[in-house]
Image (cartoon, rainbow, N blue to C red; front, side, top):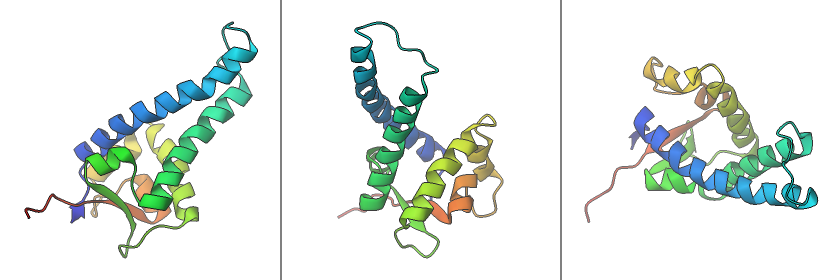
Length: 139
């Protein structure tokens, strides 16, 4: 096992983004139905909160139950604590919101991994978690 590379992280992010966007599409349907097909204002606070909740539940449920999302599984990544255990709900919640902050300055929180002595991102550090890469073993 080794620390997950930036490329693997981005691969998993792309995969998971497709899944989250599909769920968000479904979550938007009730808002469209209520307006009878009329456009929904993107600034609609209940809609924005619903979309945030969908993303939050997607990541926290997968991380808490399996230690990985479907995208992370495809790229053989596992979310762990510093001692190799499964992170608790508090750490997972901090990681989710810290990852949003990591995206804000042009993804600097992710790019930080390239300079970090341990290869960690901002949200890895702030949540006390890390992504480990588990290479395929020949059997």
